[in-house]
Image (cartoon, rainbow, N blue to C red; front, side, top):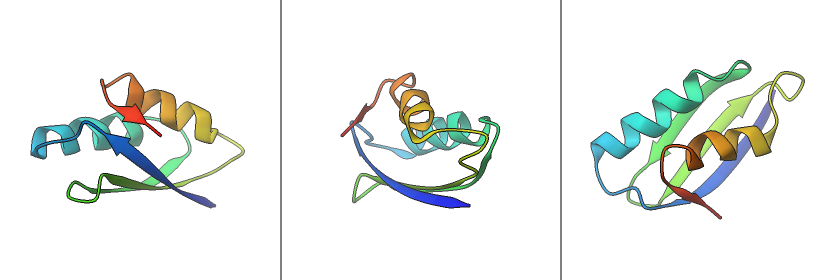
Length: 68
């Protein structure tokens, strides 16, 4: 398992948290997602053989947020 922390801009409320969590948990290979709304951070545990960090970032961006 790999772990990554994404800096995500644009999250402002619990709906944002649910959108990001839902998008990432639907990706094959993602086992755990923790969103820290105040810090703008998303911690993701994933299987690098099934999903890439780029694909994870893309899933967050598809929800309308910016990943730095």
